[in-house]
Amino acid sequence: MKLGMTFFTNSVLLGVGLAMDAFSVSLANGLSNTKMRIHRVVLIAGVFAFFQALMPMTGWFFVHTMAEHFETFSVLIPWIALALLTYIGSKMLWEGMHSEKDCECEEASNLVRCLPLRTLLLQGVATSIDALSVGFTIAHYGLFEALLCCLMISVVTFGLCFCGVEIGKRFGTKLAGKASVLGGVILIAIGLEIWISGVFF
Image 1 (spheres, one colour):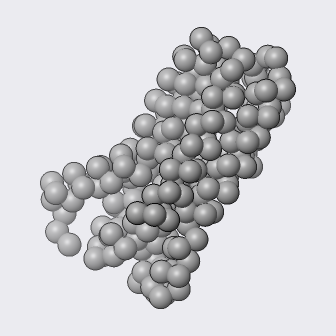
Image 2 (cartoon, helix red, strand yellow):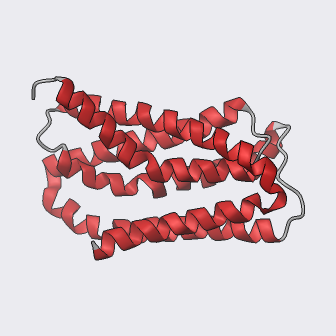
């Protein structure tokens, strides 16, 4: 495929579309921790960016090697996303309703406690797993074009998620102790949106 303005425009727009769920979750993460330091914000944005690039590339690989099996697996994608985001969101809701104080992260140990790496990775998978289907969309790309497209998706995702966390931090200050509850509601709503879109449309 010839690289041109259309290719780059489509890749950026694809990145924006795919990153919306990750942006919303980043917003929720920022809401639940208004004192998050910059290196943690970069880590969160980086994890989402990584998975948003990995999933379409994985989908592209499956389409070119085992398309029949991938098509069968794709039916489960909305259910997996719903389960993961409902689990994480419910956990945030529980913690928010049983805690009087915002999560304050001044030290590395507290940072891990507030948003464990395991939870962050689950968020990354849950918000990007539907991007596996993009493997069908870019199936006509060669390997180099597919890699470049996924890289651009990753860059767009990183930028949007970084902004999402920062916006969440600012609004979280005003919401005080209710921020974690709102974040949990957002995650569950995203899971339902992915499930409804994937199952009924």
